[in-house]
Length: 107
Image (cartoon, rainbow, N blue to C red; front, side, top):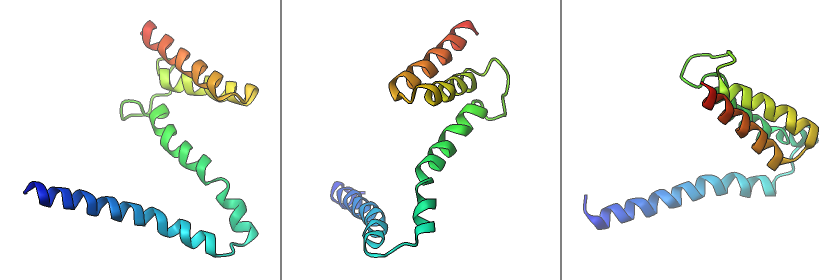
């Protein structure tokens, strides 16, 4: 592939990626969504975040690991409790990472 063709491919992929993200935003801003749909959509970021984090916490090596040796699971559980009690993102991240590093250092 020539450098020109590669550059054009990269630019085209960037445009397609931009349009894929722009179209739903543009449509959503022009349409009136029912109240029930708006209420459901409020939970989408939380659900996506949980879907990204849960597999890493529960299956760090590809198989379920619910043992005390799973630092990711322990760190995640501590982070959940800290987030619930403090509502502080920085403290939550620090507590979760501290537990993860402590478990990894001990094992």
